[in-house]
Image 1 (cartoon, rainbow, N blue to C red):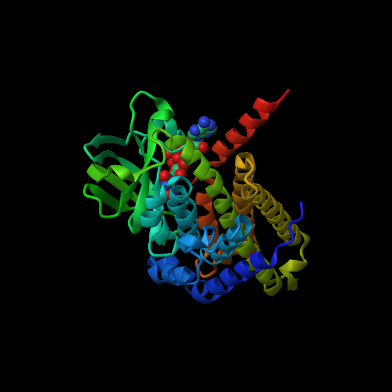
Image 2 (cartoon, helix red, strand yellow):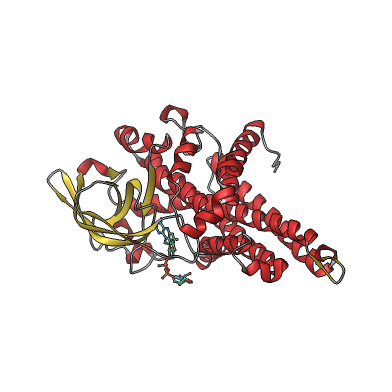
Length: 383
Ligand SMILES: Cc1cc2nc3c(=O)[nH]c(=O)nc-3n(C[C@H](O)[C@H](O)[C@H](O)COP(=O)(O)OP(=O)(O)OC[C@H]3O[C@@H](n4cnc5c(N)ncnc54)[C@H](O)[C@@H]3O)c2cc1C
């Protein structure tokens, strides 16, 4: 497969890179320290056409392909993991389901503003009873009352839930029907009975807002059901396939940032009378990180190419997400090692990359779940 970037892909990568270097990189450490949510950055990204990158121009998107979208997520995440996650979740989780499964009216009212960067989107799947086994653990229920859905239940860890224009909620519309009883419903931020809980305190990703969400007789119009009733689980799996390319790209950005910092520090820092870059042990760490990140990039691009071609890409997305997040974890670990004691201090960015990347081995399906998906497919097709 030829992975030479097209002119358009390069242009989008350069746009995102220049934006990130100017508007994000200089402030990322400070935002990480203060936990300040940089709302203005998303407004500026919207003005640049970045918030609706993969969506058609008729809705205000940029019509970019999946590789270009991954490149943009990589560049933004390289500057700041929190903004990378907010950005990837907005497009891949908050906006994509409405684009994929919404009707014309829903696309006009709920999708277009997200594609145009006039607000952030969120997707709420995980509950206190678990996130890996969604079919078994989703208890949030929605019942029809006249022309309204009435939701009751609680959700955990909703990225951007506090600030989102709309939250898509996976809920049970039919009891006793397992995963076939689940549906997706669009809940506007001002829906009566929607209660946003406390902001979670996290080890990293400090300016990505993670909240609990409660539904207390929460009422939304009947027409906010997304797609078919009872198809929510199937839709969710499809959305997560796409989201996993985004998480892989995010990890790639953080891993690349860690590698860049390692290269710089290894040449500046001296020990035993020479730069530490001269030591073979340091060179091996750098070489391994570069090689693994390159392999991650190719897996991400392969999944993206299949997605754009309209082919099945679930396994490739799982492989890309799994490999990229774990490769970045190792690259960030090595970056701290190469920095020695300085790597453990907040004066240098590598400990932030390490903390921010750690979530990526958990969110949108843990590493264990990705291995389960990959192995199940292999076993099902084994002769
Ligand atoms: C910062 C952050 C942001 C998030 N954003 C969102 C969001 O926007 N929307 C949303 O819905 N959720 C979100 N999540 C939730 C996230 O997707 C879940 O935490 C994740 O899917 C894991 O679910 P869990 O935490 O319930 O772990 P569990 O499902 O309880 O898993 C616990 C452990 O058991 C393992 N395990 C479970 N089942 C198996 C199995 N079959 N085989 C082997 N091992 C298994 C898991 O791999 C894990 O190691 C977010 C979480 C965080 C921390």
